Length: 218
Image (cartoon, rainbow, N blue to C red; front, side, top):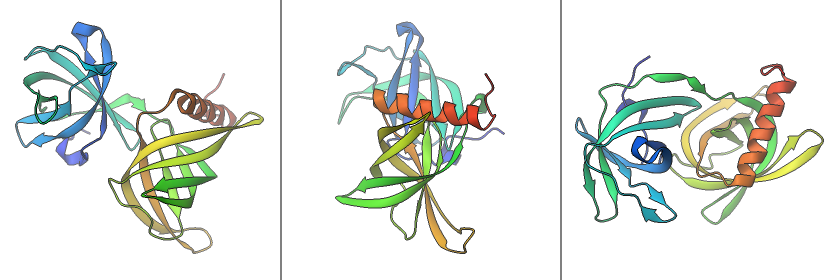
């Protein structure tokens, strides 16, 4: 179903993949904000710490994941700004469509995890895991939407436990009772800038579980 970027309620800092055809590659950028009905603001793409040269009116493709659903759309550069930091004004699409080919599988788990946020370390349970994010369960209210955190967990892949560290951002919160009637507090998180070793461990775990449960057949 078609929607709008504003309807998705994206928060500043949301990771976006920016494809620049003139450079024949994609760059990770972050959402800065919107000018309603006018433009989408994102950070300027970089290569090894240096911002790349882009021209106004240059055509781009943007991709992002929200709660395991992928979206992609075409845009163009409306304006470049350099203060207070380099960022781009991009044409805001009237509507965007979910990309059926970019739905990430969710793996149901009950893995113990340590969550580090604001000088606190909390015990949590990973209730769901996907390549794009996870759902954390707590016995008491613990986090807030938009909050940044890190997660340490051991992911079972084959006969090994692979330690993994994830940087993440809280994007949703709900509460519900489990099978024993206990009230639990759930927080959906989106992974931000996966390190190579964490990316390998995460994909290994997700694909292994897909094979084990029959979602993916070899």
